[in-house]
Length: 288
Image 1 (tube, rainbow, N blue to C red):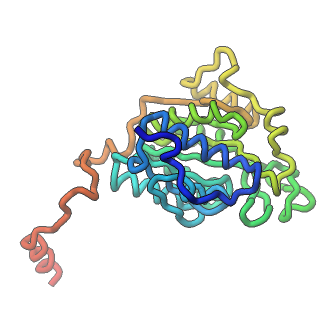
Image 2 (image 1 turned 90 degrees about the vertical axis):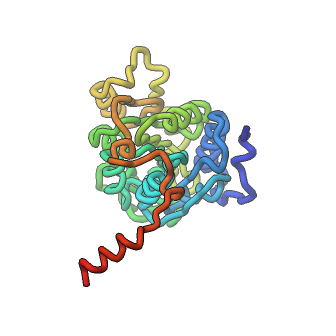
Image 3 (image 1 turned 135 degrees about the horizontal axis):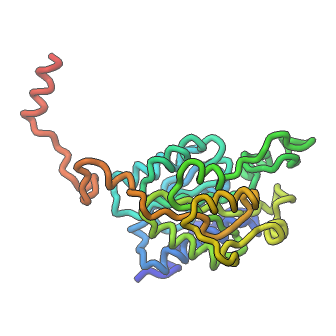
């Protein structure tokens, strides 16, 4: 059985020392090993940005796509081989900026993949511009006098879109994050884990200390029911999205691929897709 070491490769991450993404990578590796997964059973698909590099740092199948398009690629991989555990990963700019439309459609489509977003409230790879999740008043290279836009709150957007599994983690709480990743992978449908993953180089506001002070850990809230959608929405509104743990889970939803007529368990890549010559000739005659 694979261990955490089996999910490591020889590629050294070039994230800044202290970046929260290190903990996310380690949490994914620990979760996969704890679940008994093997490297060849997993695919990590990522977009552009500091966080997008994660697909090259984990010893599984990997694909580093273009900006905002991790989810379409991940869904294609899942349809081609539904036996793979497919994890899409990226940052808040990648997923909730240029990729927001793909996120919304992935939620409503409900394909069985796990989406892990490393949310640092800034564009790190391009050296410190404000992002969709940057707070109003946030100062950055693009907003020297303060951001005049309201921040996008991923948990509120996800719940409003009808997501079936929603959780949030914090890079400083690896044990909780590992548990959330395991639950998300086990969930049959589209699962989002938004991770507060501080950028230690360009974001001096949303630091580790900031999150420790402002986060509400739902694991410690007595009576919280993650199956109650109304309570989940009320909670994320009251905390302005600054809560961690399992926020919402609906096990009644059926994954997209299970609803495709004639879609079999055999992966497409193993199927015989050769066209009968007689059928081909019929098609040619129709257009001759």
